[in-house]
Length: 289
Image 1 (cartoon, one colour):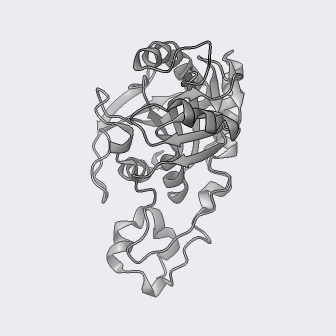
Image 2 (cartoon, rainbow, N blue to C red; image 1 turned 90 degrees about the horizontal axis):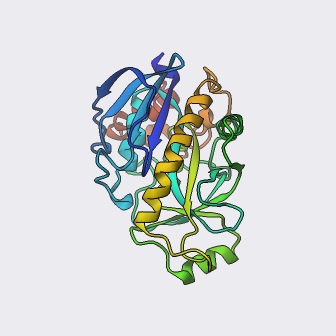
């Protein structure tokens, strides 16, 4: 059913999803412009799945160029209630080795150039974001990773840098001193927007390198990332296929009620064009207004 769909956002190295059946492509228009690409809609284990390559077909978009609002709004319009995001990351700690998978539970924001909310223009909304990923969905991903025999870790903090350049040694040293675990360029804004859209969101972080801090490993390069992504992508696809069987048919967590007490603007003061623009997200709270 459309309202029970599972969204998959593929990052570097994951540009398609094997095993999708009855596949068709759908273009979605959003008030925030075009998403990264058309959505691929199909079935895995009889569940409807919506797949989107974050960087577009052929990896055309750098992290700062991605239209995150359009991507998540499109998922909402298509009836997605859960998003499994796959992302390549560098490790900031010895225990997270290249080819490991981490189901992160926290983010640390170092971005400066990305719109990170659907709201504004007369509609003030403040979501709770202390726990930025859906614990229930993260647990499903971790259990699925264990079942397929992957080297998978539960929990960890993902530093979202702006990019596109990789870190300096000084930056990596500061992040390590703060006790942060992983570094990437894409997932924090997705998590914020998914929460605003009341979609459960969790990240599969695929470790490709030790960034630039490890004395026994060369600093990260695109060549290293691509080589290890090829090895990790197959594991990630197997993990996702296993996890989809376990995703419930109905949301039963606070993610589905994220806006319940978050809209602060008095209903009669919200501009009608803003309500119309954001109806797929806010409509259920403003129907009587």
